Amino acid sequence: MTRDIAMDAAPGPASEPLARWPFSMTDEMLCYFDVAAEPVNVHLEARIQGRLDKAAFRTAATTAIMANPRAASRRARGSAARRRYLWELPTRLDADPVSFTAFSDDAELARQRAAFIERSPSIEESPPVRLLVATGPDADYVILNAHHAALDGHSCLELLRDIGRHYRGVLTDGTAQEGSPRRPGGGEPGNISLSAAKPGLPRIRRAWRPARIAAERGTERGYGLHLMLLPGVPVVRGFTTGGRATVNEALITALIATVGRWNSWHGRPARLVRVTVPVNAREKGELSSAGNHSRLVTIAALAPRPGEELMPLLSDVARQARRARHKPGPQLGGGFRGLAAIWCPAVVKRWLVRAALRTVGPLVCDTVMLTNLGNVTDPPDFGAAGSTMAFSAQAQMPRGLCIGVITASGRLQVALRYNRALLDQAAAESFAQLFAEVLGEITHVTGTDERREQPWRH
Image (cartoon, rainbow, N blue to C red):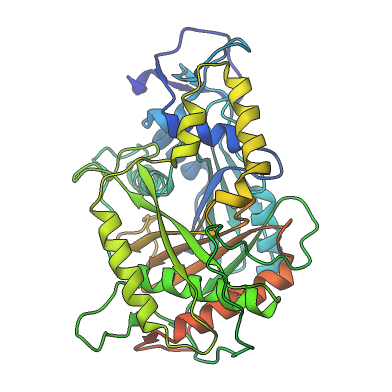
């Protein structure tokens, strides 16, 4: 079906789409959440040693997108009174998804990255995906920006893999390669230093309302991004009773404790910290299927007092996480499912969702999100030796902060996507450093070479 799609950088004449299908409830809600100041997009990038051929990359990207109906789709036009949205697969792409730029240093790359991902790609035109190839002094960066209603993190990873495979084919014989997508490896990412400060003990308030991260100089609109490449892959400390938690469980634990300490420093009473954790819900053998196939679970705990041992919290988080992984559940929380199911025009549901976020959102929404793509043992291959990667997702208020984690080529990359209404750049960097220090209390790094290049540390 997708072989008939043509590439056209400018919108072509209207024609009957190749296929139409309804938005899932998750797709629909993500569209309602998406606004200019708080884009609902997924950012994934790979650092490539050497130079990419621009013409070959454009051909490979177009071929890979055209072969993926979700990546090539757009939202079908409809009346203002429509109750549901429809995806449609057009006969041609409406826009060229690839652009190129150059940078001289990390600071300029950071500015260009931030500008590129500050908006979600429009789903009104095909494709809802954009790619930026940024050329620097010693490496190229392939940066992908996808609307989250079309693709999730695993779908973006598979798309980059497809582009890499087609790119190698174009360079080899001038044609894009065929073949089934490779499956992402599941694995473990863990540490850093051990210098967490110990401020005064917080007042404990066991209210049902979840904690909100204390704001610090947050006055601007839009998102900021802080990337932190750890010196190695952390190893989690073992329990005294035997056994060991996963790195993802350690990351959640460290995030709960970090929010507690951060709020304590800002004079906030201790509350229940609730962490939203996307879980890959693909069936075995379906890891390459595009779209949104993650469900959201919540891990909740009262943050330990500053200076208190973190292993009991880690044990509690591990129990909750393992129970949640094996317990089927919906992709969205009950309240938002209810709003999406209302029998009324989509434009009304969008208004209701935005109003709910502003009013009851601070009372019921989780505190923060942590999303981890895990250990990518086979990163996108563009014909160069191994690559490091970065990954981040949206950070709407009232959460205002999302920690994105990915491990590739033996390096663990932490990305803090923060809402500028909550934190400014300096505050986000302080929060990131505190998170690293807290993580170091329950993990350690083996085989670390501090002299290794850290291209994403700013």
